[in-house]
Image (cartoon, rainbow, N blue to C red; front, side, top):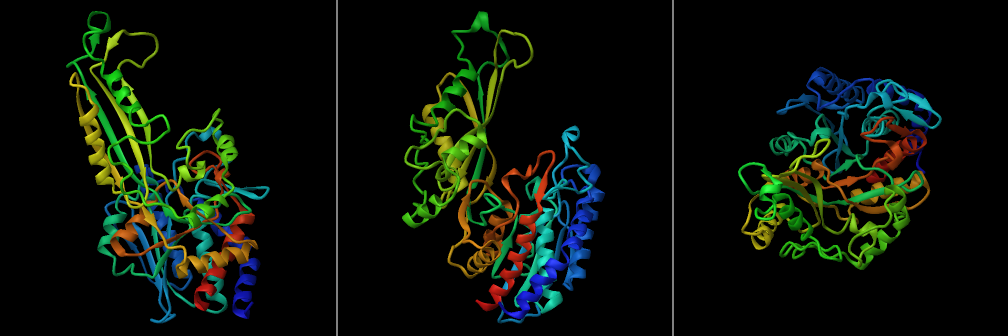
Length: 459
């Protein structure tokens, strides 16, 4: 190990307590992006982040306006034109804390209990942002960065990054980089460093079925007027066959086939059927029989009912034949499926199967594309090696079942691919009361980032 790398790692260890104190300072800002009454605190969060970047010696630090909460940008390009440029992503906004009575400590006053730090945003993702800041500080204070860095820290991730796509479009030249490091993912468990190299996309629909022009008396009209709730549930039930396959016409036409090597890598993951049963407490698992549970939630597309609404749902009884029924349905998509094409396939299904006794409409509410990063890229190699140097074992590679908007937006609008990692754990209660950060894992994460920068310089 060269002296520069060793000095940076030693600097991080010597300053661990100060790093933790600064994380607590960051966590004390209630930057809840969804609550208008917290707008001043969100702005304060942006200013705190900008102050950190300036203290790291970053240049061109700006708090840049969007249509909502601002983006914080900074850069250091001293490594030169021949060195790679790394864009580092993060977000400074957090989820609401409700229900407050379920917290065992103040959600905005970081409290250490055992190996964990409890506070809103500790894991998602202020802890990850501070890890990246402090890794850079450790390198800058001891030798200097061997790569160029840029920072993109947003304030709207927890409300869907509503204005980030437009921001990236307008500033794609400013954000130009060889790749982006995004620590907003996490580990499968504390002993398994993890890199996420793919994300599923999303097509989200609202289907409405209409019958009579008003709710009817079920005793007078039941049996002669087709009940919209029954019609809709039959249509939704028909969207899967008995083997769990989706029946929308042509739904699987463009699904990219996974290689044997990729499926072998997925088989290394500890997320077996027992894992899913324990996590969910369901009596048995369900889904396509030709794929493992982990494959079903990562490399296969899905269609799920997110909500159903119709008729009388209050206490007691009311004998009505409802005028309408509604279902919220989401499709998780894999490469090379396009949300717009899935919308067309949903409409085609409804035209084919909806009975003439009802009227219907399909609203396309939200679309998000897929994202996938080449696993043999320099950025992935440097991060993989850094995780192995910190944890002492080869990292696991996985494709995530969910979507992260910025990954798709950077790839689509700026041509920048992302390396997804992070040091949060599944049991960290992100978005829930008593959110926490496992501090030994967090400190390993800082070291992994330090290794990453030196690995990039060597590669």
